[in-house]
Image 1 (cartoon, rainbow, N blue to C red):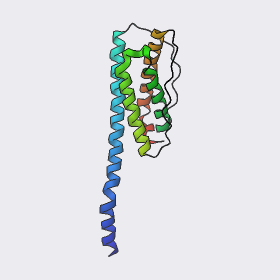
Image 2: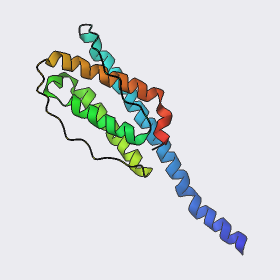
Image 3: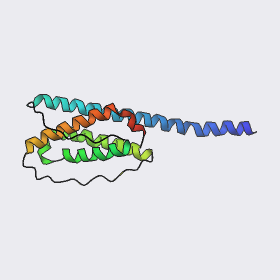
Amino acid sequence: MSILLAILYISVALPPDCTVLSTNGDSIDSILTIAQTTLVHIEKLRMTLPVTQPKVPVSPPIKGLTSITQYLAVLDNDLKNPSTDHLIQIQSDVSSLEGRVRSLAVTMNCPVQDRPAPQTHGNIFPETHFHLTLAKAQLYLEKFLRNKDKLKVC
């Protein structure tokens, strides 16, 4: 009788666990695909722009889902700045990426902070801000893809 109960328990309990793992794996794959696509969009845009080498601050460390979500939200806000109107597609990609990472973090019971409020920059050098924001996005996403294993930890 106990063997029958064990088999019944396994048949009922095992599929949802397998589904969750598969869903997380699919979710991570879609997150990585969005990040790669965003980098392609950045490269295409860079080909149409004059070559500049702005000094980019060091991007924050990628410790896990919590830190990734936090910085992607900040980056999303930076991309919404009026001086970055040409970055609408990239902002949309980053926003989507942030939402997917946030969703994965919530699914894994990771602590997630509220999205930061957008900051209004009294930017007197909009062209510089544009190039700086583009470079920040590119560097962070490249770092993000190199540290994709961090999508499995909080």
